[in-house]
Figure 1 (cartoon, rainbow, N blue to C red):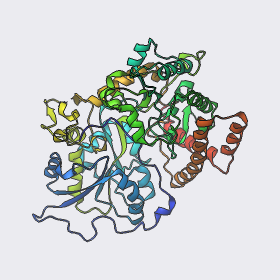
Figure 2 (cartoon, one colour):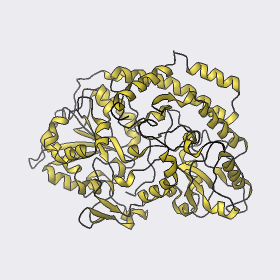
Figure 3 (cartoon, helix red, strand yellow):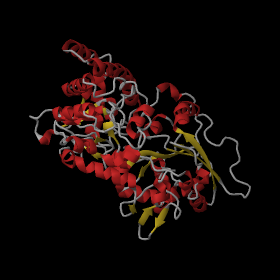
Figure 4 (cartoon, rainbow, N blue to C red):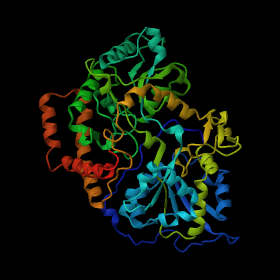
Length: 540
């Protein structure tokens, strides 16, 4: 598998309350055989993945897991699209594999009594125990107040302790046109206008897309959306994973709010509309599909068409990547203090996952299953899960030093590295050094541009820490139901206003509707404030 330079939003935190039916349904294995022809225990593990082109059973490193558990692992590979369609039905029926990777999070375990409490079994999984003892941030993301853990986290290592979102701009075009790096929104507008009118790609065609902007997702603020420009105004976003930023919530000076009703939100809408009016954002930006957005980034691999994007790293541009550099977030106005400008704070959410592996209560052969899970969290199996098989794809140079082969990046199907990347269930400890991780190198290169912006962020008082969770089923249901109505209305209006503009009356009507108790926005803010205060009381 070729390592991917994109990382998509995680599954939603909560399901609808109606799925609670059939809580005592059949569970895993049913009446099927629990041993193979050789008498070895069978363990069934399901995994959701970007691509299932290379089956899990064909990845050589999976044999290390079977050797460790002295069992046969039967893998079930599910593409994301299939899991998105099947998750609700499987939860309603209680039809779970013995273990599931990248499928369930602690919120699911709170709602459904299908999952094994793994805390009493840590002695059978010493690698997992060491991981949770070593990385308290990872443990906090999954542990309930009583210390019980129903879903294990994963940690892809220090190489990924970076922000998930970056602004990438075409430096080659800027140099050709004699332009400086923008420091304010006005500066950025001038640069984008030059990109539109001065043929920076030199092909004699007006085919440049100054700001190749991602559309807004109707379900919330996903990765690489244009509202990272809220950081230009001093509101810190955290657009990744299950962060409440995805539903419009933020923290500033220890107080939870919704940026959907903040004046800074309108500021960003007005700015994006001004770019739309000038033709600096595509007219169909609100409806373009992913294929069109990607095509505008990568083009024919020779002539660039995108001036700027919000993305992962310059590897998003593939063969054109050397034309692009990260752009520090520009200030909304020149009068703003540099210390007021922030950046998207997602380090824990980039490095860690809170839904690596969950075990069914009804799993057969649990002793073998725990041995298999323990093997997954060993250093060498973790490295192989994430990067590829040793020694074919990754060289093990001893003493925790590894090097990823160049062939993992050549896009040749004959030399594809057999790994599952960020879908792994494992732990790459900080003492492990993985060289030639080109995706991580590009991320760190991008992240450096935001060092000062990130220094302006208090990771407790200006961000909802990744370990803050809504651990009441009733509060989860309230939050989920309210968010559906809030986002349906707010994002519909936002898309319309970016396209057509917003006047003061429309904005006031919008605020009045969102702040009406029937929609529940203020109630949701109160719920998040309650859990924020509870989880951070010893950290402030």
